[in-house]
View (tube, rainbow, N blue to C red):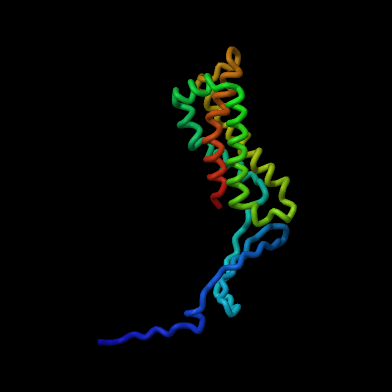
Length: 179
């Protein structure tokens, strides 16, 4: 019976850690993750873009994600009724909650490591843009379905849009994470 021998590299038994560094290459923010042994030997480096700018591609991803979850929720009578009967203070609370959740998702996935690099405006644009795009998708769907009586009950429709925008915005923000 033949035996095969494997030769372990000199670093095979050393613990490995990763070191993340944010660099700017020709105006683009990149994350360099280096896998390093305790003696300082770099085993592997991976470079990935950090998505700090809110680009047209991101708009399309947010719109698609918002439609992906916003349309099914827009088709439920429960959402119509809850939105119609929702107190105005609660609707404002849902807007704030939605913005906080979208902001947290964006911050912890892309902006945390670049917080001291002047990307605050892009961060605010991404959060507000995600919310407004999701609300626009929901508004369009409710209007096209004939569920939104804008002329007779605009406040009720607005509260329906706010309610349905919560899952739509989270789905849009999640779809925006796709590279």
